[in-house]
Each structure stands twice: as structure tokens, then as C-alpha cells.
Length: 285
Image 1 (spheres, rainbow, N blue to C red):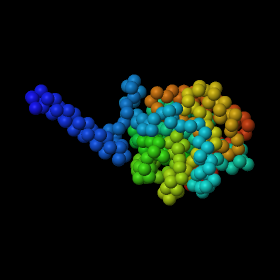
Image 2: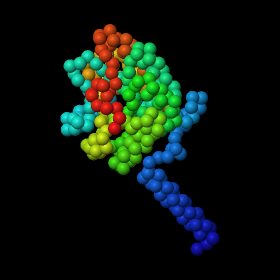
Image 3: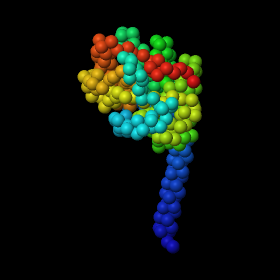
Image 4: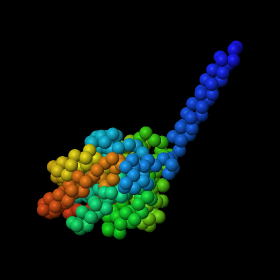
């Protein structure tokens, strides 16, 4: 074998070795929950560079607007999964996912305070830890708090071990800030399956879905956000909205639409309550 061929063969073997090492490293990373090293940073850099992002991806890229499978699961597990409240009482629960967000959660809280309305916030553990002051404000102003996982993964694609880690880490963060572990849980993207629901029940969680979707995650603007809610709301409705999301999402339409929704429903005599009040369960585990 001449020197040229030998050199080429050596380089090829080195490349194969390096690729194999990289693949092994990726497999190792995927087998365990992410650490703070996995935080993606705001590309604009002028808001906050420590805002943890949604690991599973933007709501627009992942979530189906009407997960019919959750209706089937609710019939199978009525004591664990809740999609709406009492259909005979003129009261509704506003719920907000994916916060706390440094940009939009304070604006949502301002609108709620303006109307003296209480809501329920499903918090991402990593964001609650990054924005402790906003998390505390949510609690101090009388709103209920639920668990929305630590990194917002798409849970049906993860192991049950990962689910338990996400729940426990978020519980610890929230308890450290406001003094208790929340009982309420909402799955990112509303994504559930039978195994997940069973595990959540075993961990003493009440799983919360919704029956009215504002579809604000599609950023349709304030008029459509308000219309989506007002055209579908009924007695006992659980209304899905967002006070946070992917770094690229501008939720100004949610804030403006929320003001209109509350004003209109108040005219109809609708009472706004937290989820623990709507379904008659304690907020804490």
C-alpha cells in the first residue's frame, strides 16, 4: 500500500470514529431530562436572554386545535381528566398557559386586575424559576396556579420517567416560590394518552383540558381571539388562552381580546372563577 492510500484510509477511519462519538453523545443527551444548557436564547436579545423556550416547539407547529382523543379519555377517566365545569351554572374559568412571560404575563395580570377577575395560570417550571417575581405576583393577586411541566415537551413522545421528572421539578420550583405543590396539571399542547392520564392520577394530579379554545396561539388578532371565545363559551366553560409561548409569538392580541371577552361576558351576568372553584377541588396536592 502506498503512502497516499494509507493516509487517505487513516483520515477516513478518523472521520468514522468522530461521527460515532457524536451519535453516542446525542443518544446520551436524549436519554435524560434537559439541563439549563438546553435553554434557547431570544434571537433579538432586547427582551430577556434567559427566557426558557418551549422544548417541544411552537404551539403553531405542534398542537391540533381540537384534540378529540381527550374527550374519549375524559369518559374513561372522569375522576382524573376535566374538560369543563357545571353546565347549569353561569360561570367560567379563564386559563393561561406557557408563562410566566416577561413580556405578556404582566399585561394579562393588569387586565384581570382592571376587571377584578381571577384566573388560573399553568406555569412552565423553567420560566417560573427564571421569573420568580411574576410567579409570586400571580399568586399574590389571588389567581390559581397549575403545573405545565418544566420544559414543555410533547409528552406522548417521552417516557413516563421523563413525565415524572417534569412534574416533580416544576412542583419543587413552585413550592419554593409560593409555598405549595399544585394539584392542577395541564399537558403541553393538550397532548395526552391513556398511560399519561393513569400516571397523573397515581401522582394525585387533576388533569385539566378545555372546551373553549381562543386559538390565540395562531396569533389571529384581538377581534378573532374575542370572537373565538364568545362564539363558543357556555355555562361551565374552561377557556384556553396563553400568556406566553414561543419567543417569536406576539400575544398583544390576547391581551386586547381578553379585555373584550371579560367586558362582554360580564354584561351577560357571567361569573369568572378559578379552576379550583369551578370544579370544586383544592388548589394544592
